[in-house]
Amino acid sequence: MRPNDDGWQSITYVRNDGAEPRTVEMAAFAANGSSPVVHANYFNPRAREAAWAQQFSGIGSMTVNANENVSAIVETTHGSETVGMAYTSISKPAKEAYLPLVWRATNNKSVFTVKNASAVGTWIYMTYYTESGTPYGPKSYWLPGGSSHTFDPFNCGDAPPEVCNGTWTAGGVKITANQPIAAVASAYWYADGQRTSAGQYSAASSGRTSLFGPSIFRGKFDATTWSLLSAVRLQNLSGSSWAFVTLDFQPRPTDPPACQTSLTFTDWIPPNSSHGYNTRGGGYQNGSFNATLFEVLENNGACLWWGGTVHVTSNQPLVGTVNAAWPLANRAWIHALLGPEDARAAVVLPKQQQLGHSWSRINIMNVSDSTVTSTVHFYNQSGGNPVYSTTLAALPAHRAITVNTLDLSNCCGFPSNFEGSAMVITDAPALIATSELFYNSSAPGGNRIAAYEGVGR
Image (cartoon, rainbow, N blue to C red; front, side, top):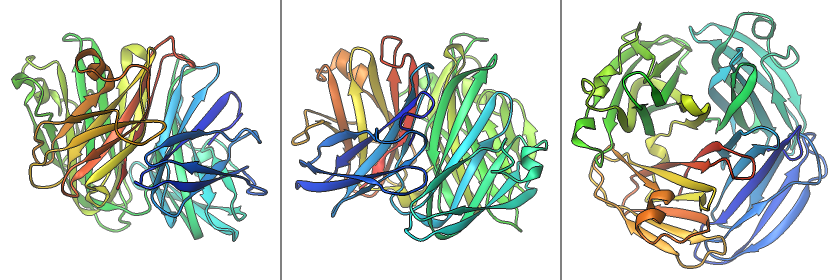
């Protein structure tokens, strides 16, 4: 989190996900980890509060503790730039952390922050991998107990010389430690030297052989003008074996018949390597780049706006991300891909909104092998009973559906001036969800988009 840091300001949104009131303790740490400022707040059932850390400047961290389930996200905006970003808190720090997408380029740059979640100091070791799998490092760094540090691949104090002084432009980073750690990557997009967008995602603590993305786009205004596109990034975590992967792109079942097109293909990813799959520019297929890979989704020009999901399977553990770009508006955002282990019968979205200048979207995916029906409940910040509920159409296996508060306010009696949270429920551990937060030009901080992953309950 970034309180009072060079124009950046972070807010942590904390929600009591239970049916009973409880006290939640929030401790804000400066980067050096010393003397945290602790606040204990009483939360009503399903209430959500915003927490600031104003007592220090710079990049820091926060821990949230309660005797039952709580969920939290961090949203960060910039005072003089129309950019924003968000990420979901890490509930189980581990001794390994994987970041599949880190940039060091002119128009795409990344930093990542690592927190020592223990009171005991630890060395951390960071190995950077090129997209072709070449390892650089490990680079070591001492993190005192409770402290955090932000690493910049352009800085030779933070990265191996082959990275900070070399031609390394993108790849993955593996971080190991002797104590539990948590890590978050921040990605920045630039155009003409100006930062135009930002996104964040939380590190994975292990790889998975099945990954899901509930929000994939390939959209055009006309035959040549792009409106929205997505890029999937996969990293093979095996250091010795090739990963044989299958990527299955499926449309949203509620979209028009012309857009019920799908695409399934395979690829080979070398050990430690990363491959990308861009719905506009193409992607790797069976080890070779195919620039026209995704054109089938356009259905010979009949579908200019395709939306759907991706399901990735592999014989080796993978980590992955999906980012979306809106070229005409110079806006972008990023999500981590989720696994079936993340699926639950209930998923919490700690921040939802419908105001004059902002709204939100929830992308709900059924990762089970059976059709499910789900209901979305929206709650005010004060919690209690839902202020609005909607039961969705039956959702087939491995498909997704979108709920947009702007659409609900235009058609269906959704409350105006809504700020709160949402919970998606079904009767089986089948759901994952992500959410985007949209702001128009009249919003504080200006026109921007932030995105995060839902919290399974």
